[in-house]
Amino acid sequence: MAAAASILCLGASLPASAAWEPTRPVELIVPAGTGGGADQMARTIQGIITKHSLMKQPLVVINKSGGAGGEGFLDVKSANNNPHKIIITLSNLFTTPLATGIPFNWKDLTPVAMLALDEFVLWVNADKPYKTVKEYIDAVKAAPAGTIKMGGTGSKQEDQIITVALEKAIGSKFTYIPYKGGGEVAVQLVGQHVDSTVNNPIEAVAQWRGGKVRPLCVFDSKPMAYDEQVADGKGWKDIPTCKSQGLDIEYVMLRGIFMGPKATKDQIDYYVELFKKVRATPEWQDLMKSGAFNTTFMTGSEYAGWVGTEEKRHETLMKEAGFLAQGN
Image 1 (cartoon, helix red, strand yellow):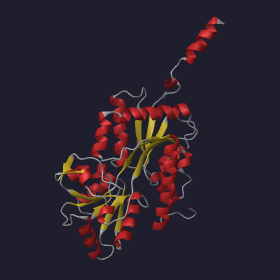
Image 2 (cartoon, one colour):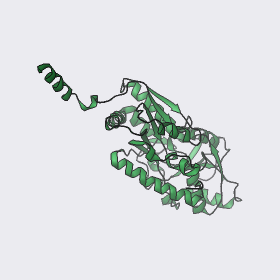
Image 3 (cartoon, rainbow, N blue to C red):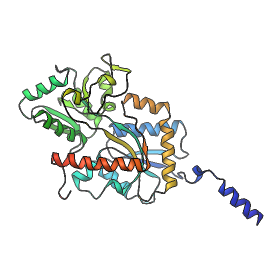
Image 4 (cartoon, rainbow, N blue to C red):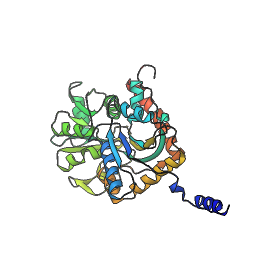
């Protein structure tokens, strides 16, 4: 009896963090192509976890971009009781099921944590004459309808949603050209195959530093917080909001983590603590600065509530743009 009592006491004294941890490699699914913002963030996380030995098991990044990311979402949806598969999300968490009608909804997954919010910036080629939003709008209005090309990631996703909002605000029509990822979008702008883009900061910062592209405004309610110089003697904070320049459009994108269905509290808690550790590293801080991210962090019911609100907002935006699949 004494031995049994000792075993019970030992079990009761185990720390909560010992309740669950991965016992085999963890797959981090990216529902987008390589080179884009989600892919870059996932690979930074992978590097941080490896460098700082934050997990005993390796983290493996896997891109599943088919069907506008639907391939990745359906994969994790089917991962019932599989805590060794997690997914990093972007706005296609909402746009893909709404636009395609695939049998998926964010509620099929288990929310873990919002890591950050990604900004969208209106970019033009640095060789173009327009240096302000007004000059850009004047050029778009002066051009024959449909001759100004807007490059973006995917179809009926966030970049095209913003493009439609721009069309309505300006009263002119773009020709929208979809590409597989934000990295390719930036390259196409540098090559002047498109006239403008609404890429994330991290997807075009290298081209800005290289003097190849120019930021005109950011689609957020307030300027970005980073004052360190990036290019042209300017930092991210020097980019005005689009709203202040006469374009009443606001849009930020989720960078968050979900698990498959039926994840337990211990499993969720493990990943919440893991990502808190990731966010505390200098490498993460460097990523936030270089990509000019909004560093908002949420977990639990607050996170789920935010996601639910964003789903409704995206449904409204996509309905207005005519992007909803039949039946949605």
